[in-house]
Length: 65
Image 1: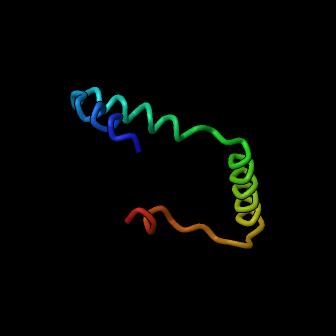
Image 2: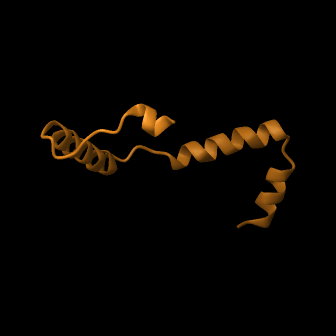
Image 3: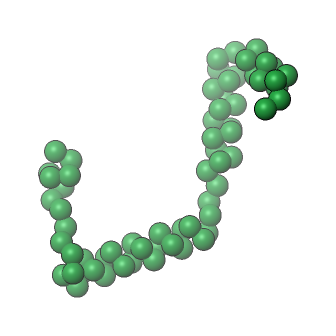
């Protein structure tokens, strides 16, 4: 990592560093259509299993406490 860059960032105010952190975090969380398709397929399989009585649900009160 570039030491001068880190030093420059540390000179920013806490608000500016927080904004920079938000920008960096957002840049890492980009949509990925391939992953979305995999999750959609998994969700459909789980729904089909539930509707076909091949699995059972867990009451929300058991999950949430």
